[in-house]
Image 1 (cartoon, rainbow, N blue to C red):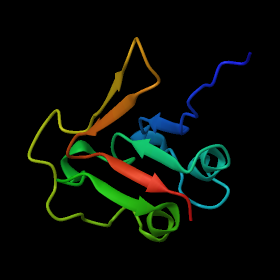
Image 2: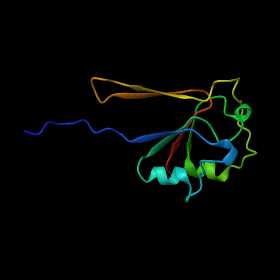
Image 3: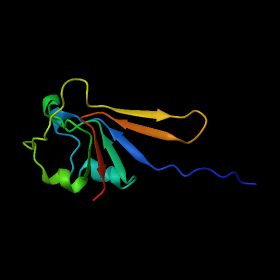
Image 4: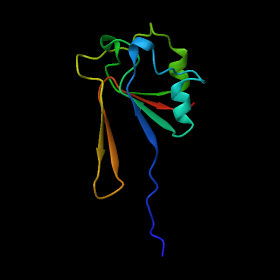
Length: 111
């Protein structure tokens, strides 16, 4: 008899490399490649300086981020270090997982 398993939703958690402006959000960039495998990508912050990160967790589509330039100023910005984080909570006894987003983080949907 086959044992039933719970289908787990796939997602990625990514930390940006700001000095190289990575990841990129265009249709040929890294976030689009990750969306080929998962509907949601969670970014700990934007690829920019810490003092210009969003002050609240955002949920945006990849195309929205692709249209915005580095000079986009989210309002409000983060109140201070260390606000750009994502905590992943895993269960040792089940397939349950939970993400908790810090102030500068972004959940990026495909599209």
